Image (cartoon, rainbow, N blue to C red; front, side):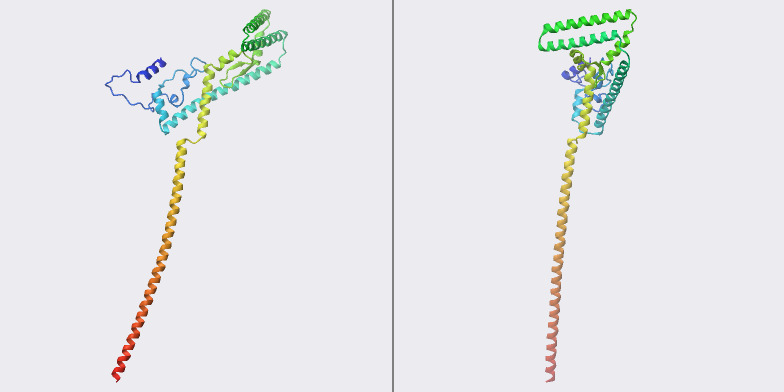
Length: 319
């Protein structure tokens, strides 16, 4: 249903069911109806559908147009908060499956220690030998299939199936005789298992390649792999400065460099003005001093001239 609605939205638009005369609301990625996880990268609810880790259906809308608007929006507090919520949710899921992986490894170690301390019965030795032969035949059949030898691969698979039937018959015989083979058989199987480092599932060591491929392409394994990749990418991106932050940093460096240059020019200009003022003051002082000396010389000349005139008048009156 969601897929069909999304296809219709892409073909006819989100407002396909509205009356053309009705004014439509402008799309805004900040609306509460949109899934914040989907806009950041993807919605985790879509990863584990019909698996043991199924999170149920997401209650918010997954809108591609809103996602494009979110990606094109400038960094802001709400956008950063969406990314933080997505990272926190994914990290919690990864931490939970990591705890599951640790418990699985501890379980295998415990089962292995119990198995090593238990004496192996003759019946168990027969079953273990059959298991080894079966695994060997499966590997040889797989190699033959890769080489293109279909006849040999089919022959080896038939031999493997025959051994499996003999093993099952042996187990039934011992069960009918009262031998509790279930615990020992399960312990032996646990010893040959390992834990997937991505999703925490138990895997049989040396299992057929087809079953390994089925696990690697399963929803649960791919889902946790996608979660881990997304968290690693976001954490790696945080270590690098954002382009706009780096641009602002360069602009800030340029402004500081320009400010230092302007300050240096201003200081040089002030120093030049001060030097000019000092020279002007010295020049004014010399001019004033020169004028003072000239005025003094004029006064002195005037005084001498006055005295000569006065003496001349005195001599004239005396005659």
